[in-house]
Image 1 (cartoon, one colour):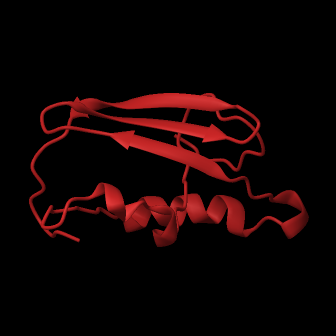
Image 2 (image 1 turned 45 degrees about the vertical axis):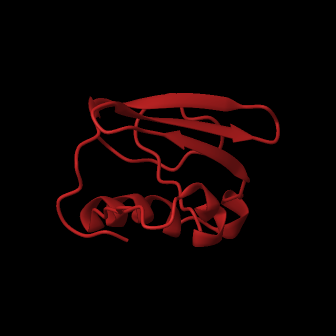
Length: 104
């Protein structure tokens, strides 16, 4: 599917959300618990090209509160909410599995 830059609500398709590490509440992770990350450089490059060509006047930043919930064998569930009360809940179509490569 084609990727596009959107100013406003996204009803369907792909969206790239950049989260700074300070935005992650590490207090919610127990000591000794493994946390995994993944990266798809090809997908990130295609997404980046949709907004890096835009002028600053065409872009705006919006603070988003993200809640993630997941359990092995269950879908990952995410809720995104902004200060204007816009909210969306999404779940992965497949269940979470055991990470196979690298812990964070």
